Amino acid sequence: MLRPFVLHRPRTAEEACALLARLGEDAAPYAGGTELLLLMKLGLLRPRHLVDVKRVAGFDDIADGVRLSIGAGVTHRTVERSAAVQARCPLMASVARHVGNVRVRNVGTVGGNLAFADPHSDLATLFLALDASVELVSPRGRRELTLAEFVRGPWETARAADELLTSVRLTPWPASTAAAFVKFGVHERPTLGIAVALRLDGSGTGRARVVDARIAIGCVNPCPARAPGAEARLSGVALAELEDVAGEAAALAAASADTADDLYGSADYKREMVAVFVRRALRAAAARARGVAPVAGFPHTIVA
Image (tube, rainbow, N blue to C red):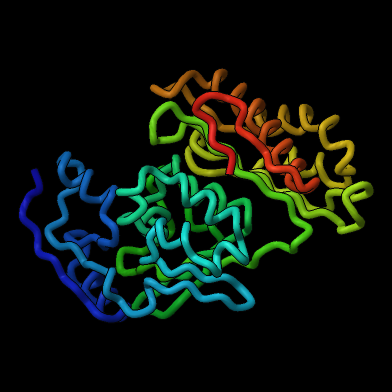
C-alpha cells in the first residue's frame, strides 16, 4: 500500500530541479515509476513528494544528429519502435524489445532505468559497451558524464539530489561494426547480460580484422562493467580466427568479473556463466559480420 504523497508536475527541467532543490530528501523524481512505485509499495522508499518529469519539454524526444540522443522520458517501447534508433543503432531497438514485458516497456523509461542503477539493467550494459554518455541538468547548469562515471554501484549514481538526467547520448559505431547482446534468465529479471561490439577494419568479410572491441558484463557485477583484458585480446584478430580466440577472451572476461554469492547463484557459477555467454556473444557478433542471423540455441537465452 502506498503512503500518501504530493505529486508535482513541472513543465520545464528548471522547474523540476528547483522543486528537487527545495524539497531535498523528501522528494524523488518520477518518470515511468516501474521501480520507484514498487519500492514505495514495499515501504523501502517513503518520499513525501514525487516530481513527475513526464511532461517536461524535450524529455520524450529522440534526436538524430551527429549523436543519437534519447530523452530520459522516452519509454522502452518507443525505443523499440523508433525508426531513428532502428536505423542508427538497431541493436538498441532489439535490446529494448526484450526489457521486461510489454506492460513494463509501455511505461518504463530509459532515464528512469539508468537513474535507478539496477545492476540487472539491460540498457545500462548495452550503453556501456557503446560508450554512451548521460546529460544531467541542475540549478548550477548542465554536465555530461560517461555511463561508467554516472553509475557508481548498485542503486547508486553520480546524480546530485537537485539534478535530473535529461538524456542518453551515443555516437553510433560505423557500419563495419558487428555487435550482439546475449542475456540469460529463467524469469523476466535477467541473471546475466553480455554486450559485445566489434569494429572491423572494413577490408571485406574474408580479410576483416577487429580494430576495436567492447565487452560489457551486466547482472553479476555490482554494476555493469567492461572487460578490458578480453577486449585487448581481441584487438587485431582476424574475423576468420575469432572462433579460435573466443575461449581465451571469454576466460579473461570471466576472470575480471566481480561476482558474489546470492539467490541467482554462487560466485563461481556466475564466472563460468560469464565465460560461456561471452563466447556465445562473440559467435553471434561474428555471425552478424558474415551476414548470418545468430540464434540463441540455449533455453532461457535471448540473442539481440
